[in-house]
Image 1: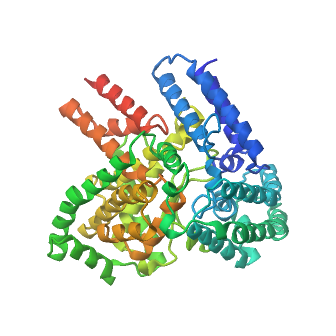
Image 2: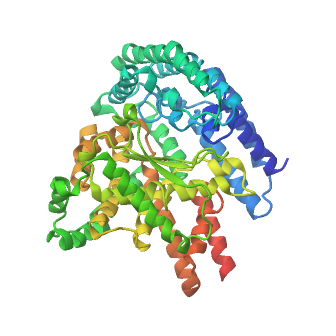
Image 3: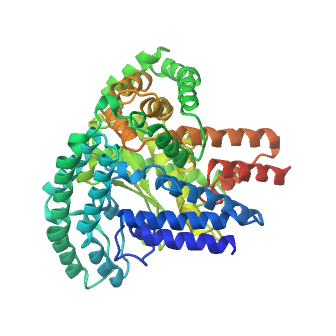
Length: 561
C-alpha cells in the first residue's frame, strides 16, 4: 500500500470521528453527525490508529515528498495514540481530564458554532440533525469525566468553576442570541427563515436543557473531587509525570526533559530578554531597571485601550500595513483573506485575549482573527500590533491558509495539529514583523518584548506547575515578577496552563527552533541566503514536526549550495 493511500485512509477516518472539525474545514460529508465520546468509540479509534501506524512502519520512504508524509503520518498517529493512553491503553486517556474551559466539549456549542458555515440547503438541514444529538454528546462527556475521578484523575476545581461560568453565561443569554443562530446558511436561500426557526427550537428544547444537565453534573459529581490550587499540576496525580511527558510530546513534537525546558526559560528571561527591556526602557522611560519598566507599562493609562472599537481598528490597521509589504518577504501568499472580529460576549469572560480560526476549505469563509474586547480598558495598546502579527499576518493566517491551499500535500498534513510548529511560527512572526518595519512606533516594540517574555515565562511556569509541584500562587508570582502582563491576565493564563498542560511550551520552543534553522541557513548560504525562499520552505509542506522542519531546511540549504 502506498503512503498516499494510507494518508487518505487516515484523513477519511479522522473526519468521520471528528465531524465538527470537518465542518469547520469546509468538509460537509458529516454535517449531520456529532462526536462520539464513549469508551467504546475510543477503543475503536485506538485500534484503527495502531493498525495504520503498523502499516506506515512497514513502508520504505520513496521520493522527498513521500518521505515527509511518512514521517508526518508516524508522528500524527503516535500523538493520537498517546492522547488515547497509548497503543495498549496502559496509560490514562486524556479525555478523562478534559473538563476545562479551554478544550472542554461544551465549546462545540459555545465557540465552534460561530465559525461554522453550511453553504448548501442539505448541509443546513444536516446541522439541525447534529445539534439535536447534543444531549447524548454531553452525557457521554460526563460519563468519561466521572470515569476519570474513579481512576484517581480528578480535574482542577478552578477550571471546573470556569466551565460553570461559561455554561451559566450561555444559559442566561436570550434564545435569539443562541450560538446556533450565528451559524451561516446558504447564500440567498429562501429557506433560511424556516431553518433558523428549526435551530431555535433545537437550541431551546435540546441544547439548553442538555447544557443545564451538563453543568449540574459537573457541580454535583466533579467539583467536590477537584484538585485544589496547591495541587493543581499533573505531578500530584499518580502517573502524572508520564502523563505530562506525553502531553509535552504531543504539543512540542519533542522528547525533552521538563527540567531542561524550565532552565531554557529562566536563562532567556534573565539574560537576553532583560537586556532588551533595559535598552528599550532607557529610550522610552529613561530607566534601565526592568521592574520599574514593568511597573510603568502596567500603570500608565496612556498605554491602554479606550474601547473595543479601538482594539479592532488597531488590528485592522496593522494587517493593512502587513499586506502592503508581505510580497517582499514571502514568495507564496494565500488566496484566502483574513478578517478581524470580536469574541462573542458570552465567551469573552473565559476566552483568551486573541485567537485565529483558519479558512474553510470550500471557500465559504476566510481566516478570522478573534479579539477579546470584553475589558478593553485593561488591555495594553502596545500589545495590539504584535498580537495581530502573531495571529494573522504574517503569523497564523499565512501559515494555515497557505497549508490549506497547498497542492499535492495530503489533507492531514495540511491540517495536522503540530502545535510547536504552528505557535512557534506565530511567535517568530512577531519579531519578523519588526524586521519588516511593521511596528508603527517604538512604543509598540514594548508589546513584542512583553509577549516574548510571556511565552518564555510559560516554559518556567508550565513545567513548574506540572513537573515541579508549584502551586497556582507560585506560578502567578513568577509571571508577575518576570513579565509586564496585567495581573488579571496572568491569573487567566495560569488557569489555562492548568487546563491544557504542555501546550504553552510549544510557542517558545517552536520559535527558538525556527530561528535556529534560519541562523543555520544564513551562515551556510552566506550571500546566497534568500528570505523568501526560507519562508516558503518553512511553510511549503503543511503542518510538520520540528524534526521534519529541520530536514526540510537542510535539504533547501543543500540545493542552493
